[in-house]
Amino acid sequence: MLLDNKLYVAHSEEGPIYLNAKMANRHGLIAGATGTGKTVTLQVLAETFSQAGVPCFMADMKGDLSGISQTGKLSSFIEKRCAEFGIENPQFEGCPVRFFDVFGEQGHAMRTTVSAIGPMLLARLLELNEVQSGVLNVVFRIADENNLLLIDIKDLRIMLDFVSKNAAQYTTTYGNISSASVGAIQRAILTLEAQGGDKFFGEPAFDVTDLLAEEGGRGVMNVLAADKLMLQPKLYSTFLLWLMTELYARLPEVGDLDKPKLVFFFDEAHMLFTDTPKALADKIEQIIRLIRSKGVGIYFITQSPTDIPEDILGQLGNRIQHALRAFTPKDQKAVKAAAETFRANPAFKTADAIMELSTGEALVSLLDEKGAPSVVQRARIMFPLSSIGAITEGQRLDINRSAPRNILEYDSYFDRESAYEVLTAQYAQAEKDAQEAERKEQEEREKEAKQQSGKSASAGKGIRRTIIGTMIGAVATSFARSIGTQTAKAITQGAKSKKTTTSSKSKSTKSSTIVKKAATTATNTAVRTITNEVLKGLLK
Image 1 (tube, rainbow, N blue to C red):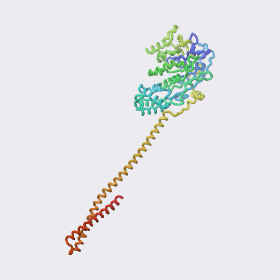
Image 2 (image 1 turned 180 degrees about the horizontal axis):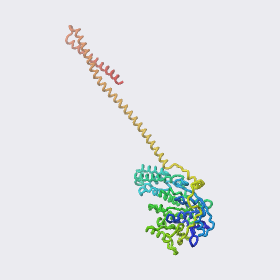
Image 3 (image 1 turned 60 degrees about the vertical axis):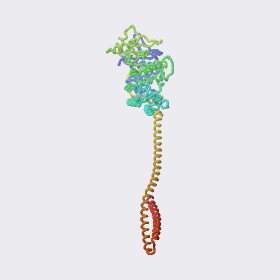
Image 4 (image 1 turned 45 degrees about the vertical axis):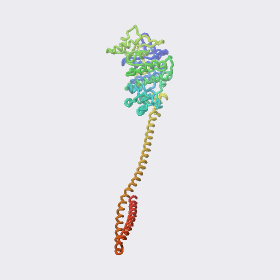
């Protein structure tokens, strides 16, 4: 509640307890066991900031925080508290609210691009080991150097495929890129998609400066529907870590202001630090230490202060500790550790008080104007002026529809040209070029084969001509000689019969010689004639 321009958040026996607006960017912690009132305390702080004109971001684990959008009602419990606190006629009212949802179901879609989240956070989200994280870093580097935008999951998948196919080209520059590591990353992406995490990546990407909104002088409450998101703890914590990182990168330095520009509530904060690599833990610590100079206060909500690393816990100046139970030695150790984080109050023993607190009560220690923690006080948390509990689906739908245009634009997904489109086109062109080259090569082979076939046919024809000619020539020669011999014999016999009385032995010999020459000439002529005619017939 805003009282006399002061952030009235709790009431002790000494009177009201105010949160110093100038010190609200020094971060804070709300801790306590389940059912002790942490969610209501978060709601009280958030609506008080809203009344002061400070926008907030918070994750709604069970839908309970959606009631901050509706006007609260007087109840017997609140009447009792009003009497205790000396408050008359509390002005119940809701806060301006915008609902968001990573999955785009219960609120406006909240996305980012693969490039924006970066290899470090993505490696954590995919639960990669050191070697696989190194390969993912290489993939991001190659994408940057080739101006390939990594917007959604399909961009990342095809980029991994591209790097794997060209691993030999990049090995000398970036080191070994094993197919096993690429395969492991691809499998991790499939797991993320199965959990619905792929919906977190795409465009339009969420602009974190849209969280810094006011309506009618009141800070807007940006409520993230996280009931489904909580089923994927890595996605939830990585998403909120990305938001903090993006705020740190985008917002200008402003130093200490009269009030914060934004208050960021991180519920179930222990998830942020579970299985976190040292490099990432160091980055988280750096962001928390420096983001206050950007005018942003971060408040962690968890069960025990021991859930937060000591280096980060030391930076949380504003603390509200609800009850802790100590049933085991481990629980007792946690209680003692929580008590030691407070500035002691001589009026009571802090460790005992932590176990004695009832629902709605807390140990409170806030920073004074000089930034020093106040002595811890046992106090009752202020009641909210907005409604406690979940709203109806119709009320949520009405609020979503009434959002300003820049918020409604997040509901329309679009897919511009990025690594997937560019590399797909390159693959298609390469395949087309390969098919064209293969076609030309096939044509060359067919042409060469045809030419070779022609030469072989010509050579074969000549060989057949020679063989057949020789064979026919031999046959024809034998045949013609036989004819010539028979002819010569006939001529000789005829000559002898006509000249038996007058011819002498010498004349007979001369006549025989003449006849043989004539027969030989006739034989050769016949051989050539027969051979040529036969060849013409066979080789046509």
